[in-house]
Length: 285
Length: 254
Image (cartoon, rainbow over all chains, first blue to last red; front, side, top):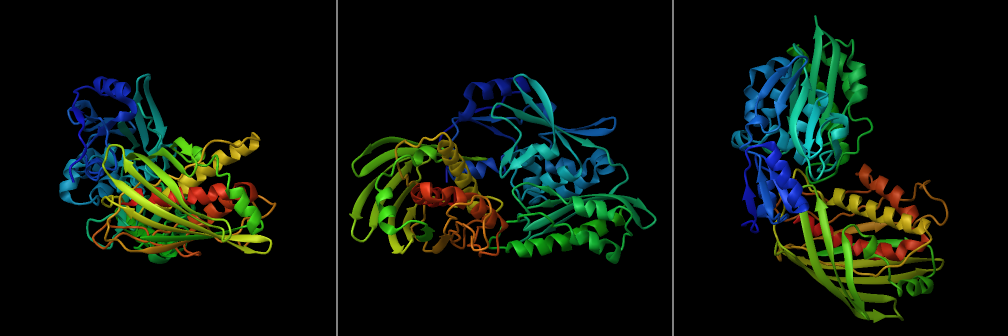
């Protein structure tokens, strides 16, 4: 289908983008990589009067070292997150998760910021960012504010980003030397996960000292598997050592039931995928 | 496509039917709904649906084409058109009340025809959307209730896109609300799960499917939260919101 008619601007600075957003408010829509918005427009599930393209704002792109954290521009593509050497060194989980996002073409257009701002509960980057304790830098007319991942994801397709605000950066505390793995379960290749697990693990000599685990598509937002994380501290990085901790992964979750599986099925998947993810992550720690 | 919903209210059928005659203050409480006019057996208005990337405004109208006092049955014809996106929908809603002594079973049958295409989302959002909308609706009603007010005009808005070829059925069970107590939902409070059937084969990658009673934690929560509030005073609004929700859900799911 062809989208309803809209005006289009592609400002070269964040200030101009914010001004355009402030002026048009509800009638404007921000576009990043367009991998989620364009289908929505084409299906006419939204018909904004103005589309504001962030693609020409260079300051929103790229990865920089900021002491104990990495700062990833919201417009950095998944593909760049996969290959970036800083990300691979200090936030390996993000690189691993980004490598699993859809297919190669989408990874070259779709952006890290766009993906988390869209906040699809089945989106891959949300749980990875949550597991990394990422912080989200949001700019508005009155300046910028920083929101922790736990407060950023509010509900299904809903984040802490206000109507007149733009996500500019994701700050990721360094986890240098941690192993990481993103275990994604799909029925069809390149599809949204039925369930996926993001895990990053620190440790040595076959023992896990610290672990961060987050779940994709087990609720309306990405979820931390806190019980699993505490149970993993001090566990041995073996199938048996990890099993009990992984079994607690789905505790307190309310996953959806759909054609791909019931809630019970997802609960089971979460425990199995957590075990796999943690073991593979520990392998690289 | 046909949708079937049933639930029970704890009043005798005549009282239930009588209460339903003053269908006021319903759409006012539905998120994004505005009633522009009500006259005799017709009403018109708009519904704005906003969820993440989705934003739709539907204008529409409805008419009570049949009202059978003896058999406690009425039929509403409603249709709507998306203000900007050109999607349309029509619905014929048949509501029947059956008395069972102290309580009344209410059956809502909806024949829905929507035009449009399925959305490309991570998963079928119907369940989630219904939870969310119903939650907001009930919250609004609660607020009004606490303020001791009711009021407002009534409308059932029926917009939405549907593929004519889609043929499906689904059922929605909203069991009897507890007469007095609030949050302590007993075991027989089975979930209120809106469960439209999935779209056609070529449709969304992961459409929602009718969940079973035991299958969905969301649905259970919904039942516990919503049903007590819908008790006695507001069951009739619930009837109408059900209709609205079915329509909205389908319009989003397409």
